[in-house]
Image 1 (cartoon, protein in one colour):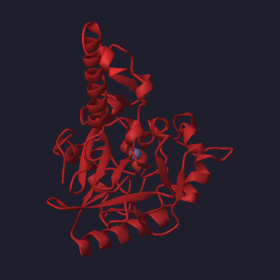
Image 2 (image 1 turned 180 degrees about the vertical axis):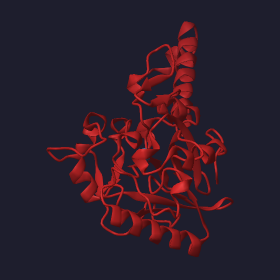
Image 3 (image 1 turned 30 degrees about the vertical axis):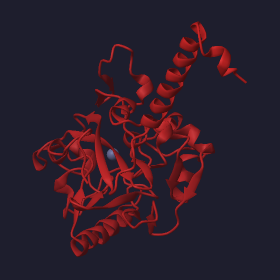
Length: 292
Ligand SMILES: [Zn+2]
């Protein structure tokens, strides 16, 4: 115990006052670290890079049939009054950036900013994020997964099994998600999964591109209903074309998922956002701005 009487006079009082100030500053910093939960759901769109120059033939298209061959690579943070969800986590791991802050290019992909720096800009650290979910396991959606190993992972068993199989699927780099093996995990078996239990943020099954491919439906107060459609499509020109990528896990399943989703968005008045759609993405508000 500190004897306050002894500290009343002399240098002791200054020391005591200083310690009190240090303690107060430390407390307020800790409180400010994580932003206060909003009253309604927010959607932040992060710039996780671009993929340039992929051959449209990979997607069963000719060059002249698509407006642009470049892909946007967005990551998304959903902030619900009850917690946070990070949806798709990029193509280039933050750890591959050098201290010089220069863009990083790997193959056809380039990222100019880390995901962590974009989270920090709005007051979050990976350790603050309640849930992690991916539309699917391909490398351009999953690069920063290990950063979120402390979050609860929302995944379909068939997708998780493929990711941790002895022979991992094509287009994945198991190193980038190896730490999820021991994460707290919710295995989603229902068609629709209500992430926060408030009916506002719903993960919906849309298999075919990969076995456990899924989309995210958001019921936003001002913006209305938005679907982050994963890789249900890549180019907007794929809609109604009946053509799917050459590397599709199951073509028939993909076509059935597309038909089901088109029906869903029409009936529910939902905007379908193709994640890789370069032109559409270029018009979106980016974090720190948000949709609510
Ligand atoms: Zn993709």
